[in-house]
Length: 161
Image (cartoon, rainbow, N blue to C red; front, side, top):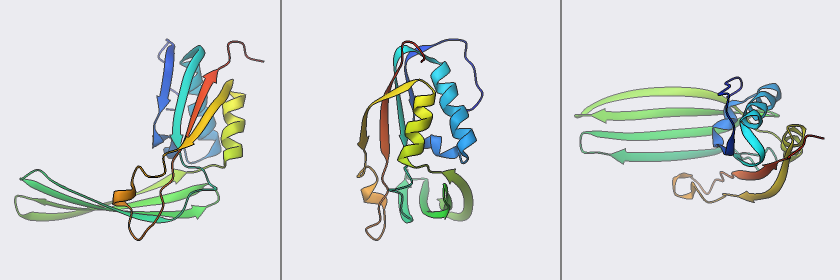
């Protein structure tokens, strides 16, 4: 996401909330530069992210079953710094009646709205619209928690200033 070069450009580039894996501002700048390099002038860029002002600690529970395997995932998102949060995931996997328990811990980034606007602009991206996807995960969030996502819809300038 920070360094790939495909030697071609596209009319649309979309980056999902995996952009949160850019857990330093330098990494975020590199990822947005990479996205912009792959976008034609006048092209559309869309990114889904958390912004610092709206992020809250929260907990999720997901569960699913395909008949052979039953999976329950507990996810805890906790702010650990000004621009970072930690996502801890515990997996209960019951396969053919046998239980295994695994876990992962991810350090993720979250940046202020002002930071997003600055980095988008320095990459020649003009924000055309922002909107929230606040209720996307409501059924999985525990205890009335919140998991707000912000979408930035941008257009690449036809000539860099």
